[in-house]
Length: 195
Length: 174
Image 1 (cartoon, rainbow over the protein chains, first blue to last red):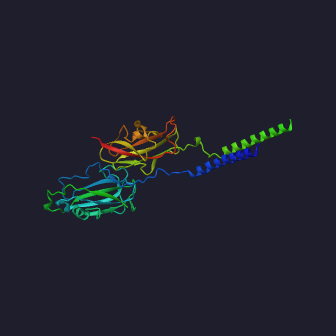
Image 2 (image 1 turned 90 degrees about the vertical axis):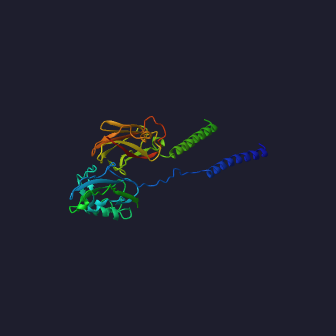
Image 3 (image 1 turned 45 degrees about the vertical axis):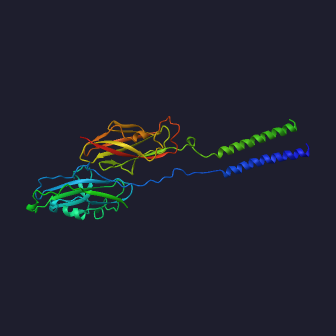
């Protein structure tokens, strides 16, 4: 084989091998990796009760000393830890000053609104005890509402619940002026806000 | 055998051994994996509360955790629904999956007291059960959940993990 031919063949081999090597190098530089599926989802604040839209009580022809006691179960269904305050924004009628209101937290094995069968009060006793009229003026917003947590906790977490016994009693000492008076329809509000 | 023939035979044996060693090295260096190296799917069901209807177990506790699921796998769970209101209720359950990844692949059946409330894909369950569970005030009923990936599914499930919240939707019965 002539020297020229050998040189050309050698150059051809070196060139071919070098090309293969270069392909490998460029392959390394073009490699990529990805991280897909990144999302952000906000938590929720949600609270519900078991009244199916019905009122706890509606008493007509009430006489002094007459009392009604009903239970409502409030369940926190949000995902974020929350505070819950109880208040009313309703304007209480003239009879409200003669109605004693008590709100007591507790538990109930088989809640069936508005029955209080099986209700067991928490050891801490009533959250509010006073006239309905005073509740309407002193507890009329989230800011001044009655604060409560399940058991001895300091937050409401998902699926936690409390049963509230609401008792309304027309004072035995209600004066003659209370005859025919009414409290008017009033709404109790449980509001949850995330911590 | 002549020397040149011996040399050629020796070289052939050496080449064959070398190729065998290379093949063995390639096979041994493959990543480990069963099922052809395909990741399984998984499903996790929870029951949401809405005040009127209580569930046990309730979210965040799962009522069904499937573990690894592949075509032909089945997973089962149970929970109890209770009517806490003073009204008779007709309760339907609606699925709220965390993603659409298994919507058309996973099959789900819900039944209670011998009645099939719903059977179909996870996507269909987003619309709610076709049958309602009727609960008197204070009454409770068990609900059984079965989820599976049909054996004939070939793809579309790999590595897909979906959390499904079952939400009650009630109607007050007259």
